[in-house]
Image (cartoon, rainbow, N blue to C red; front, side, top):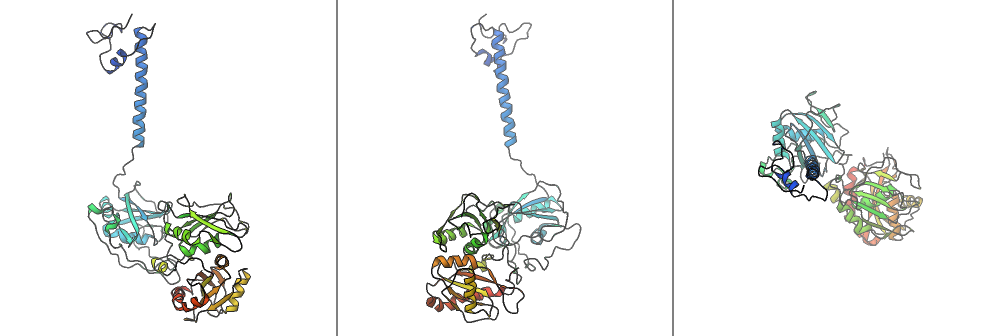
Length: 472
């Protein structure tokens, strides 16, 4: 029987009797608009429409489920806060976080972890205290210009502290004594906290805080501040590629000795599949720019030139089992804890002269009784013979410094790679001195000697740490 539309009472003709017809509605409209194939009955047409509607409903349900799964979970207010420290130039310890948080409420526990940059969880005794701390501290700098706080509500209901450690975790419910930094820590006692409360309108902008929450810590003699490295989330542009290295003689330390003149070095990794190629993660993109500007296409030793370019990677991952280079040293090394990095603080960074490669090197932090012949002998042993050496007049009995010239720039670069940070024994000292090298700003020994006073300032400023800057 041909399809004849709906009856006046809203039921489909032939769809069933006894008042059991399907009422008029969206489903009925799908049925009525269907096209009846030859040989199909009304029952066939109705069944096909029901199947189509069921499929459409299933797709709709799946779409709604997908939307629910993709919808970001909103973290509800909590008495535990998640601190993310952006640009952690100085060390973030339990003591630091406790000092900035206690003015806003009682702190119960603190846990610091460094899986992705530097983060911490701080548990307060109440939701009100946590909310107050978040409102006043979010977007602030712990120290002026660095250690910026990004604060969110955390998910856990309680922090578990398994051991009280002054630098990583502390449970204040177990002891009322604050976790003071011990003699092995990097800093002495911090200065008085300076808080600058903000209004809710400007919680999020770090630029609104013109000063840091705390005074910059004073460095303990013999210790260096931690390296100012970008976190993984911030490290875009801080990795560079180095090509053209001598496969048989190059290693991570030699490459570090050269690139550390232009910025902090975080990690170095040689590639197994590309001989003579390495990747270097610097402290920031500015350091990479300096390396590209001054070291790209420079000759090294008797070999070819090295090329340096930005890498597409944001950071270097740790290599657990690095392969061995031809000299039997590991192909990967971490340098974030190296005190041979020269840009560990703004004050120290300002003392470094950023110079292009030169055949004349400035050396400092060498034993005070060192002679010119002894120094020439040291470089001869390393197979980078120098043409002349001149010692600066001793301004202190702590160390010596001076100038050393090589036949050409390529030999001077090789000398930097082989001899920078070389330990040299001194008379009457328990530990050897660590000789430091850098490129001189003068193009001749006479010109360099005339600038000895100005260049000597580098040595003068660095010799404060001579007694402690020794070989471990």
